Image 1 (cartoon, rainbow, N blue to C red):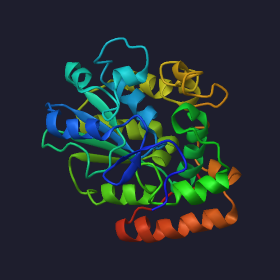
Image 2 (image 1 turned 120 degrees about the vertical axis):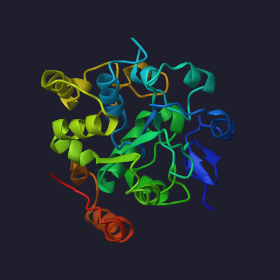
Image 3 (image 1 turned 30 degrees about the vertical axis):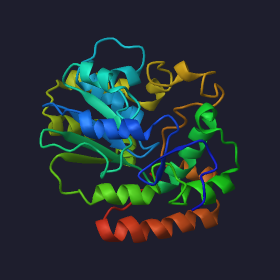
Image 4 (image 1 turned 45 degrees about the vertical axis):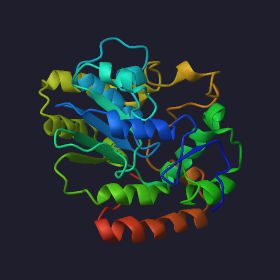
Length: 284
């Protein structure tokens, strides 16, 4: 098996971020106690995670009170200390990049899973790796990254994206999971936020919803220091690379070669579109 060309840890035979340990993953399995009202925001990297964190924090009226940044308000389960997770006030919303087979399961839980077209995921995650050079210690070319990381199930972080997605899509009829797409959120954010409200039984007035939609638009979030990761600038993040880059569908057209695009589209059709009926939107 080829070793990933970036800084990483291993869990269950899969590369995971360098700061996530096998000990922490086993601790979650052994000690994490589910509460009524718990919600997981579950995604592969660069599939709308921070966007959903912000939206859920607004919909629940900031259940953890005033915090310095979004990861204090809605922690990353695999990264956080269990004592801090246990101290959170209910309703608890937690972020995760867990595969379905790893994530805590309980009848009391609800999950919001967001997926994105794989072409944009590939390009966005490359920028992410370059931005967080303090974590990844990676500066390879896009071509090297595409072939030796993103498309390789043995070296991609959390596994190959389409394998990760297929594992979750096997649960498509699970009533505890709301499936959203990044493209759907870009297309009509108000519609998708109403889906979240219905799923979580959250009641908001039209005026409250309009305010949340406005503050959740990319133009607002990219300037919002609560979510744009500027608190990591100069520590593990390159201050010259934006965490919230473009917030649009189809930016892959500026980066993927025709051969790379065709390769991804073909394997996506075989692994996702045909077996699950999910049709990716590559442009809007």
